[in-house]
Each structure stands twice: as C-alpha cells, then as structure tokens.
Length: 198
Image (cartoon, rainbow, N blue to C red; front, side, top):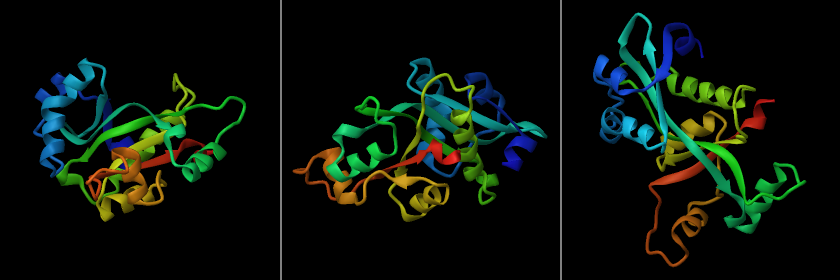
C-alpha cells in the first residue's frame, strides 16, 4: 500500500473537498456522476459514506474514491450448500440469520493513476480499517456487488474475494426468483472474510 500511504492523504469526500478539487474521473460515467453529484447526499441521508485519497504534492487531485455502508450476508436465505458452507466459517454458540459486513458500494481510481495497483491498495486499506481494533462494531466480511465482467471478477478474486454463489444461475434464483425471465446478472455478490487476515 505504499503509494496511497506515502504519497496521499485520506479524507472524507465532502462538498468542500469536491469543490476544491479538479474533476475526478475514473472513466465510468455512472461512477463519475455519483462521486461528483450523489456521494454527499448519500452521506447526508446516512446511506453510505464516501472517502478519498488526495495527492500530497497536489491536494486538488483526487487519486481514488470509494463508498462504504453497513451490510450483511443473509445466511438463512441462501441455498442449503451455500448456507452450510457459510455457517462452517463462524462460531456456533448462537446461530445468526445474518453475518455482519461492510459493503463497498462504489470504488473508482482516477484515470491518470490506473494500472498502478491502486485498486488493490484501496481494498487492502478497507480490509485493514475494518479488521483494526479501532473498528467500533462487528464486521466479519467485506462485501461487493462486483460488475459481472470477467476482468472485474478477476480483480476481486486476485484480492482474495470469493463468489457467494457457485453459479450465476444459483445467484439469479436467490436475487430475482426462480420464475424470473432475467437470464443474466449485472453484478455478482462477492465477499472477503476478514479472519483470513489472521
């Protein structure tokens, strides 16, 4: 995580930060629009908080941004094989219907800084942040709704994330119902188990 820690400063993505910085673009119009126009509203309504790393040598440059919110993995809604697997990862003193986690709702890297491992650095930062003893709540999993694209899936897998479902058909049945006419998903549920950091 050398670049972000050594050459950037971490802060909340506020209206003041957005207005004092150059236009942030990660090359995805939807993400660019979110970080420019919607991130602060999400924060105001407590739906998610956005953060960024700014370049120390030029704080008007946002290197990357991400949004997180509380989430969980709904264990008892899963198909039997997935449910049994997820239950095997945790304690058995008191069965839970949901396992606590944090959702990375948005993540973008400035187009001028892509292909330098910064996306992986952000994920490592988030993992460490929620694995830290300073975390004020239980958080077992980092969860993403990864865009259903082989390159995006491979990126998260390279960073230790696993598919929640063994197949897209199984996930379709879980998310939209068995009788749906939808044949493919725009995103795939993936997770990282923070206990893997022990």
